[in-house]
Length: 169
Image 1 (cartoon, rainbow, N blue to C red):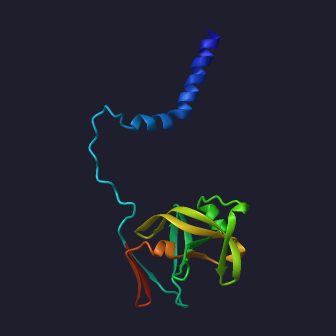
Image 2 (image 1 turned 60 degrees about the vertical axis):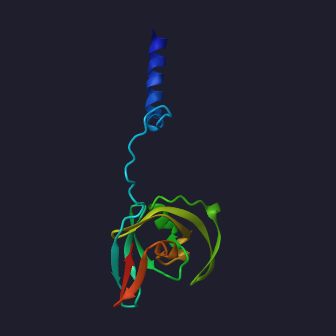
Image 3 (image 1 turned 180 degrees about the horizontal axis):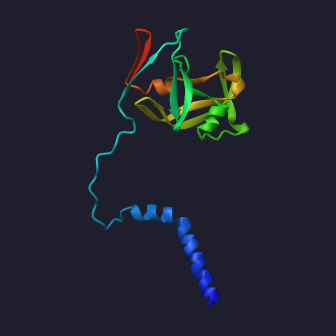
């Protein structure tokens, strides 16, 4: 009897552990089931417009959200990719190991090594872009996070009007 109780308890724990995966499998429609109505999918990016005023030096500094984490960034059309400081990347949930720093990049401070990553999402105001290629650089090699062309190039448009950077999606 005690052995049976132990087996039931073990099975209950196993089912509880695997319940999310079992639910995902159960949600898949078998071939003999009538197809469910197809809903219009939500776009991966929301439409929006954001304006950012230039600072006293003419730079466009903003607070965006990287994987839901607020980060200060400098809009940089000269940066091919979004570039994140290692400490900020870690805060945004990006795991970068020492061996991941294999890309050679040129910065204002010279050539350094960086780690290639893919950011789940970057949000600037009402604008949201998913699956953004980025680089992670050591904190001592990057003064501030850069919002580069891997984000800006996926917008409908960006322009400078009256000392304001206008982003449109």
